[in-house]
Figure 1 (spheres, helix red, strand yellow):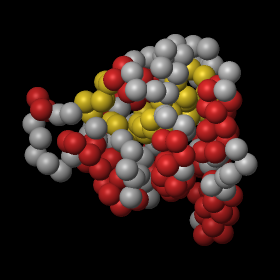
Figure 2 (cartoon, rainbow, N blue to C red; figure 1 turned 30 degrees about the horizontal axis):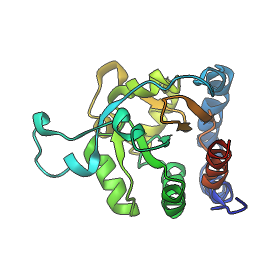
Figure 3 (spheres, rainbow, N blue to C red; figure 1 turned 180 degrees about the horizontal axis):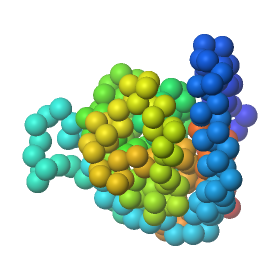
Length: 235
C-alpha cells in the first residue's frame, strides 16, 4: 500500500513553526521533558505485539457530551463489542489542545474509508472529558469514536501513561492549557497523559501492531499502520 497522508511532514512543520515563534527558554522546557521521558524507557514498556490487549469500557463522546445525559444513561463502548465485528485500530492521544494530536486524528479521518475497506474499526482514546472529545470531533470533522479514559486508567493498562513533570505542568498553565478543567480534575491522576500510541488489535484480542513515542512530535502514518494490518490479513 504505497499511499501516505504525509503525516510526519505535517507534524514536522508544526515543530518548525513552533521553534520560529517560541522563545528558546520556553522551548527548552518541552525539550527537557521529552528527553527525560525517553530516558524512563516508557517506549520499551508498551505492551508489545503478541500481548493480549486489556479490555475497555469507555464513554463515547458523541453519545454523551452536551446532551444532558445522566451518568446512569451514558453510552459506553466496549472493546469486546468492537472486536466481535473485526480488527480494531486504537489510538491514544493527549487532547484537543495538542496540535500534533489533532493533525494525527485528521490524517486518520482522511484514511477512514481505507480503514473500513480493510473491514477494521477505529477509535481514539484520551483522558479528556466527553465534552472535550465532542468539541474535538465537531471542530475537526471526525466521524469515528473518541472515548474518554478518566485518569488514563486504560492507557496505564497498555503501559503508555505517565505523569507530567512539575516544570511542564507550570509551562502548560502559562499557556492556558488547563488540564484539571479538561480532564475533570481527577485528583492525583489529573496530570496523567498517554504517550501517543497506535495499536492494532485482532478479533482474538491479540495485539498485532504496536507503536508508541515518548516524543509527541512523532507518529506513524496511517497508511503504514494499514499496511501492517493488510500484511496480517494476508497471512
